[in-house]
Length: 131
Length: 127
Image 1 (cartoon, chains in turn brown, yellow):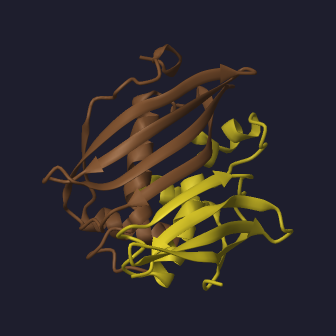
Image 2: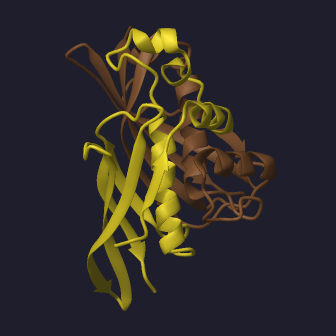
């Protein structure tokens, strides 16, 4: 369903997320992050980035028909994520409104481990403009 | 002050990030598409820049950033490939509650000319 048709409070189908050692290392290499050993610990922001990318794709916003701008970001980390660990992403559309021809949408993501514990949470505000 | 990060963002880095993070939005990758946007050319992912903020915080607080860290930031301006950015963090205050000390850190990412790219705050437990 297109973003403009989704009401605030809409819950997206949960998705599984596994960041492998290879993916963790590729992320660290891409951003130049040497603060962690990525095959032992996933860089914290990689988890949020993976979730946000899925949300953008899920809404068909990555296909070039619209301009998507990331306006703000919140994130909380409860514990490190290990490469290969299985997580569940639970995403909710917290707000969705049009102002002056642009659509402002906030998505909240919860990253849940196999024991049902939140390992991270994130809230992203994106602005979508028709091209 | 936390140890700052100064880094030049390249288009190759943006493309590597797109693959690594799974974000292939054409505004980052397609020069023709980006030329039609208000930015006029390709821009780096905001999350790529934010990753450097997280890197700085991880370096400063190796365990406590990943376990109890929180940030809230705004993206103020795009970073164009070829630009150099400067990531900084300054502890503004330390508070104590129930015997646990926490630091509030002012986060900044600026370009060479001083333009703000990211502004915001981070919070990290110290104990």
